[in-house]
Image (cartoon, rainbow, N blue to C red; front, side, top):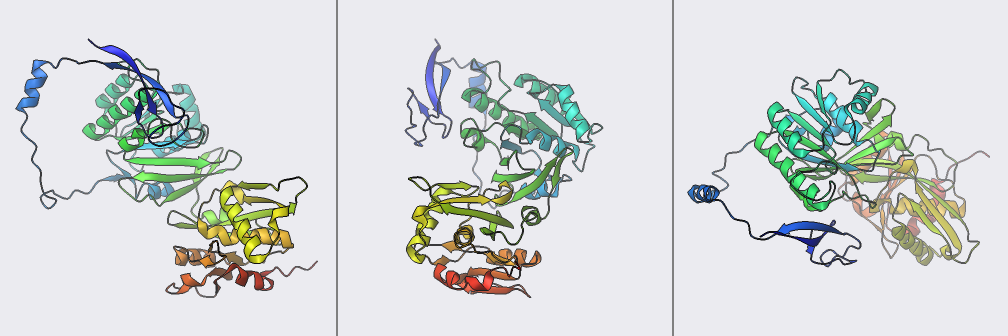
Length: 466
């Protein structure tokens, strides 16, 4: 006889624990165990099912050479940036999970992807589990897609959604969102670990058996990861993260997992009242408000996937008026900035221990590329020494604990992007220039140590007429 028992599932790694703990024993994360009620006990297997299993022919293993090669067919959208992130288009019959903060624009992105498909003769089913059909139509009117051939369905019962999908056989199915739909056979509430896991598994079965391309949107936790167990990400073919700051108008679509393409691509979009607009040259957007003559402002190059992006780094150094100096960053790792401050104090003798240091990546962009280390150090020195860096200078390089400037990846792409935007003097690690093809009409200066850059700073200061 079946009985109900309680277990605890980790939202981070999906491991199961018989009792609640503050820390997961498998992954070490804190406060990630969620209670789940499960039904246990032996269940009888009916004779018909048992006979069906026993009568199936045994599975035969085949060699790789015996398996015929099959090229997947892709669906194209009018968003070149979206096609780029997906690896050249949406693979038909795949299951894609897209996550992001509430209000970041996931529903807007899904509506525009559905409305801007190149083959709009196909059936598109948009399932809204959080909004009414009138709200979805209002969004479509705002985006100019009220005449798009999209079928709307406001439903949270997954059995009804699957029934509609099997009857209509749409080329594209969108479920917004997976945390609000439920299977009535499960006793847990919508959004619980068991509901999210089983619902995603059922949707995956639909996508693979009926060859229906399916998008599901997901909520995120406070640290930005997709809510639910990690098995949710393992079930799907592609995981997309939609990032951005509500105080800024640009959005970044990042591929975290892609079985049909590269995970080193991003797409940049501009959010306005008419929806999302793709940005083909993000560097111009992030440098649009950069002005010469401000101390602490430096240009660096970061790699987002395979795309180089020029960003403005802003630093402010002031005397500490309290007992402990402040170390605040926005868009950059605070611990890494603390390490760079220690390098400046140890290798250059700059007294950073008595200074408050604030660092900001302009336009709200978040970077974790170590090649921005040299730009961060120069921005801090520029503010501390009251140096104004010239407008046409770019700093590229990773800083080691000894103050050495280490080589960085994709140096040719970085240099070409700087030359394309009109920068004339590029300060880069000398070790990266051994086999790199340098752009024309650009002065590329190789340096080995932060001391070398410090000694030559007079060459790169702005010639201001005050």
